[in-house]
Length: 101
Image (cartoon, rainbow, N blue to C red; front, side, top):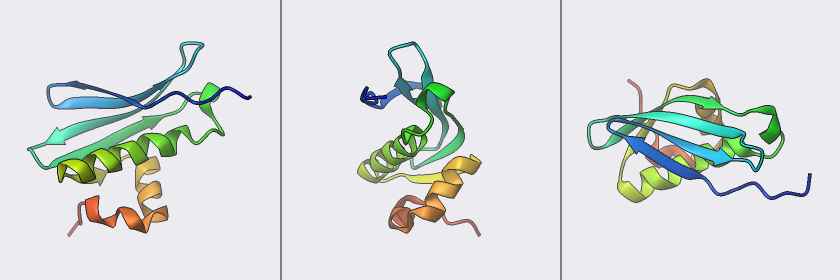
């Protein structure tokens, strides 16, 4: 497939939000989050449909959340198993990872 993956968009409503990639066929890859106070977000779900598989869509969603959290001085709690796995693979994201303990 030679089509380029679209830009990550963010949608927010109150304390909830999602990062989304929209494909030309209407498919959506998403990562949902919940805001906790002013300084933290919980990544609670990542969903990547078959139309996006193998294109790094899930990683792009988590990366965008990390970039946004870093820019805003926020911490991330990755409850979603996919996001948690990405944080283990990317130790350079430790500055935005909420330390559990």
